[in-house]
Image (tube, rainbow, N blue to C red; front, top):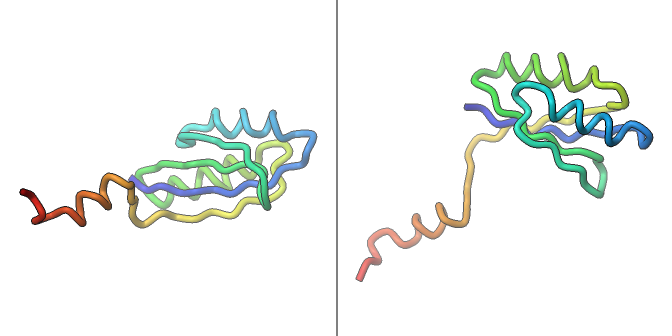
Length: 93
């Protein structure tokens, strides 16, 4: 499974509507509204890069109010638990 983090800028008057429309797209797992340089962050999960290409430019960029997207493909996932387990290997009492 490929995860893409999509940073989305929207026009202010379409923010809520655009967030809901993006969230309703197949392959979009979550959408977060946020402060900062972007208005929304969408977590996209797909089986192939071609699917990401269909979802982001093919669907997200066509939502009314979406001005721009910046897509980042995740290579590996880390969590606090994974890190703790890695560093505790061989330290069992």
